[in-house]
Amino acid sequence: MLTEKDRAVIRALQKGLPLEEQPFAALARMAGVHESALLGKLAEWKRTGLLRRLGAFVRHRELGYSANGMVVWNAAEDRIEAAGRRLAREPGVSHCYERPAAPGFPYNLYCMIHGRSRAEVTDKVAALARELGINDYEILYSVRELKRSTPEFFVEDQS
Amino acid sequence: MTLDESDRKLLNLAQDGIPLEARPFHALGRELGMTGAESIRRLKALVEAGLVRRIGPSFSPAGLGYATTLVAARINAEEFDRAVEFINGFRQVTHNYERNHYFNVWFTLIAADRDEIEDILDRVRRRPGVEAVVNLPSARRFKLQVRFDAGA
Image 1 (cartoon, rainbow over the protein chains, first blue to last red):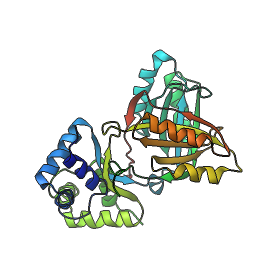
Image 2 (image 1 turned 60 degrees about the horizontal axis):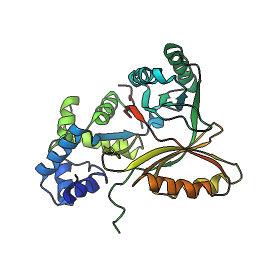
Image 3 (image 1 turned 120 degrees about the horizontal axis):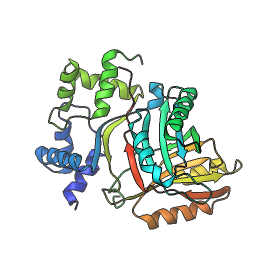
């Protein structure tokens, strides 16, 4: 169960890590807790997975990853787990989720794959398809980023 | 901005994680053979140049008690901009992309619960130009690791 202090730490941290010599001390002041308590909470949350990562988030297009495809696969029910694990091992894959097939959209395995060109991505996906034995798939490329915002937690009741 | 070898290594290390200690940039710098001050200077430059979007946390929304989903929508050309603006207006919509497909608008939602998600989707469905909305929540996660090799 999250305490009020936990939420204060989360609200402070999600504003961003200050780029200064003792950033956690600054955050602890904002949250009204001791630095050691804050670091202890972060370490615990990292351990349990509540805090997935504390790090730099890059603009990947600026780093040359101009081809970003969402690949949707139609895998046989008994092949989804093996396929999901194999896709997870692929370095260029950032996201991989099983989603139940929906009316009008029969795919059940989704992954985001990134490369320096569409040709590179198409080739990589074709190779994965051969390896997985799944030939019912589509690659949906991002044409335009319409919105990109960082989630803000526990601020709904703040003025 | 031209990236040198140290910038690339720093980008990779910083993506892997900022150490949870009192002087984290000093620790990062030590791994790269530079002072904490220099690693801070380089990170500021990378943020300034737009290569780093932010340095901060990624929390598990489900772990914090939130509900999430992916939504596919089909919006006609005539109403596209207005409908997208309406969707983007929800603070619960975090990412939104136009894709080359019958379903041409794909967005993620982080909301208080499934009811709030359904309420938002009902409102989106009623907008002019919105021809279809499909809710695609995840059943299982195989990977979530958003890390881009900077080429060091």
